[in-house]
Image 1 (tube, rainbow, N blue to C red):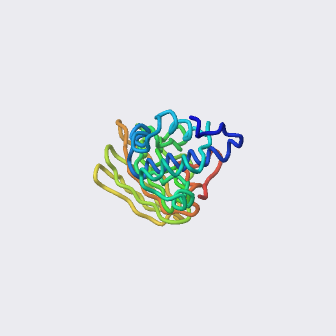
Image 2 (cartoon, helix red, strand yellow):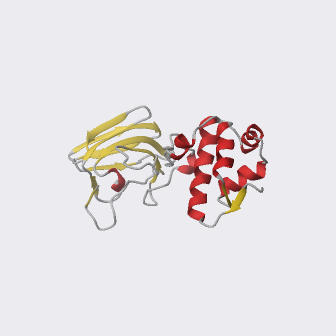
Image 3 (spheres, rainbow, N blue to C red):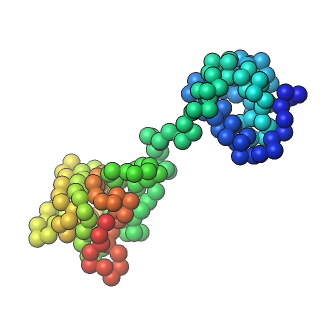
Amino acid sequence: MSDMDVCSEVSDAGDLGARLKLVRKIYGISQRQLARQAGVTNATVSFIEQGRVSPSVGSLEKILNSVPMSLAEFFSLELAEPEQIFFRANEMPDIGNGRVFCHLLGGSRQGRAMTILRKVFPAGQDTGSGQLLLNGEVGGIVIAGELEVTAGSEFALLEEGDGYYLNARRPHRFRNPGSIDCVVFSAVAATPSSNISCASRPNEPFYKG
């Protein structure tokens, strides 16, 4: 790699590496493919992406011309990672209280405008002795089991396929009176969404989101 200099400023090399990696993602090509197209070794591309070497302008142009992409386009790329849109079950954190499991969809997204939860109420469990109080609206559909919903002075026992939709400022509480787990898919449009709780906290009659 005679056309390369060992990087003296790791941050600069890291920036180049992140940009080159993004170029590959945009064009859907592997390190090996890019190296073959540019006529360089696979190690060269790998070391640049790792920030271990800093390529000369000529070497960088040679690699980019194989895409093709200009230096101006390369340095104007937005390095922010694209927002995640698909989430596996193990990427949904449980924000429940130990009695009720509340798996949050898209918890890593910045500025979420809504909260989508997969709630699992084990037999006999509920959201706590107090009632929840949030700013916004909340709704859900029972996927399995039974769910007892109390909203202010109103009460209903919901079964599979039934749902609820209410102003979240109205005190409300959920309980599973059945002998099997109750599973609910719930959506909450509350302010701020990052402060959503699935259950009232100990010794707190209400919890404001």
